[in-house]
Amino acid sequence: MQYPYQLPALPYAYEALSPMIGDPTLHVHHDKHLKTYVDNLNQALSDCSACQAKPLEELLRDLDQIPETKRTSIRNNGGGVYNHLLYFDCMAPAAGGQPKGSLSAALDREFGSYAAWQEKMKEAALGQFGSGYAWLVCDSSGTLSVVKTANQDCPLTGGLWPILCVDVWEHAYYLDYQNRRADYLDAWFNCINWDFVQKRYDQTGL
Ligand code: MN3
Image (cartoon, rainbow, N blue to C red; front, side, top):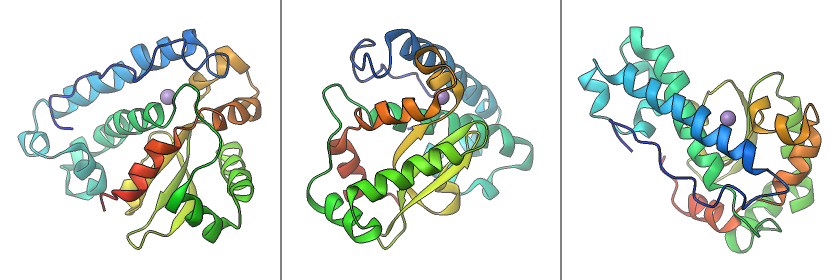
């Protein structure tokens, strides 16, 4: 992905994740929130030809290489684009369950079991004070860990490869769950597209 960025279509129908995540939530989240990040990222990059030439992952990985006047805007809006696209891609209708293959083995190895990972992921997502994300990431050796980030910060900036994320900004769940973030997370686990997450794990971009 590179400048000028475009808003890709949601990878499934707006009603496809209902009742876990409803049609009105996905419309606002994708068509309004993500669209705003795309527009603002393009705006931020419009007068920075050096930044325009770099793919989004590289911008986020090497934030310190970006001219200082552009850094905060690219961190927030570039992260907003990248993180949201990953979040939407990590879900699918009739998904959930448990991963298979090498990712399943890696979760067992790093966390003890799928259930233990799930508990850790939920704890990170609930423990993120205010807006942000919880992530399953791997390092350059393929070792998995769970991290949380604030606002639109992306683990790429810390040298980690994001393979799965959950958005815990209130706009992600307020229409469906009001203030009940834990209920949203329980539902989100049933939406995880493990086939996609496995592909991310197989193709680390570090
Ligand atoms: Mn969001």
